[in-house]
Amino acid sequence: MILYRAHLLDTPEPGRLRSISDGALVVDGSGRIKDVGAFPVLGPRHDGIEIRDLRPHWILPGLIDLHVHLPQYESVAMDGLELLPWLNTHIFPAEARFADADLAQKAARRFFGDLLSLGTTTAVVYSTIHQKATDAAFREAESCGMRAAIGKVMMDQNAPEALSEDTEASLQQSAELIQQWHGKADGRLMYALAPRFAPMCTRALMRGVGDLSERTGAYIQTHLAENLDEIAWVEKLFPECANYTDVYRRHGLLNSRTLLGHGIHLDAAERTMIRDAGATIVHCPSSNAFLESGVMPLRRWWEEGLSIGLGTDVAGGPSLSMWNEMAMACMVSKLRFALLNDANATVKPAEAFHLATKAAARGLGLEDRIGSLDQGMDADFIVVDPRLADPAERTDGAPDRVLSRLIYRADPRMVKATFVGGKQCFIQGS
Ligand SMILES: [Zn+2]
Image 1 (cartoon, rainbow, N blue to C red):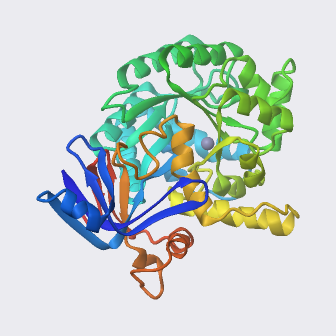
Image 2: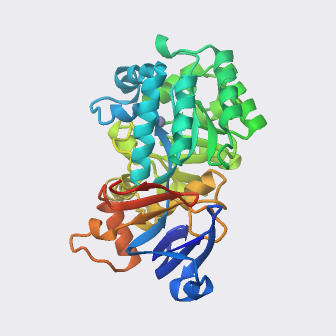
Image 3: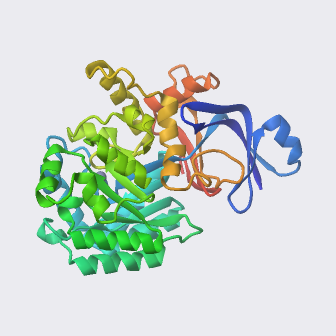
């Protein structure tokens, strides 16, 4: 057992910060939080165990990215196009290169290493259509210690030649990967079936994905109502469905383990379908701005009771940093308020932090394991130096101000160490 002494900060409830200025986090040999509280109380209680004094650093729960594309990492920041031409011009050629498993493995190593260095402890990841590249991604996540749900992209219609799949082969390969990886490494590795989006999936493929998720408990990740041209295309391809969300509902893709990227342009009936299914919308504000897709009314839909988390959506978003994504969630909400007369739009840093931790954990059904610093949970936490986000380099301060600076002024060096399941997976400067 090890006792980490630092300022503790988390948000178990939306917008409510919980902070202990001289805190102690006791982690046991199985990687769980054995005890948490004030150091003057816990120090004597755990007399004789190893103490690591991390002051003046702070301990926060690890960040959770619910939507990110591993093979697109090296294609970030390709400005100038909307979703569909951007996919054809920049993204599909990059994904086709992942037929080379060696290239895929090297890319996966860089990708997970960078995520951990930014304080992300859990990521929900799209690979490419390639089984070997997806297997390589799992192996790299396994060896670096990251918590991840990963899935092979599935596309069996309207995809470019090099990325087109046979329906049965796509389902078969996904089933093999689920068998191999879902629930492995003590539950740290999970499978997230990844039908790319409705325009590139046949009805048979989507039904097969729904069945696989039902049978195995694997997650489903896909894209929904991101771009107006995309929506018009879906309406043309699936005239029997009431709307885009109904395409997924009818083919068995909407369940409580479903993560829907974007969901910008949704009507009330669609939101009811999503809420009734218990599916989660992954808000990707950087990507939504970068690809000129739109501005999701985050607060309004959150208050309607939808389950919502955040995603960087690299390479739609230009950065792997969840700090950046939290800042964008706040900034974009302020623009809604200022420009669109949406009176109750503004989202505060403590709320964005909740979305990137506890709410995301809830979206994954893992709220009793990750997302906050509670006794009995897996010890997924980060050690942060707040001085690097502060021009005055203060070591103390009101928690809401410190968190606000961490989010709006994130410094790439401010995450000093990253722990997943009690194991140190990253240390600054190593
Ligand atoms: Zn995406």
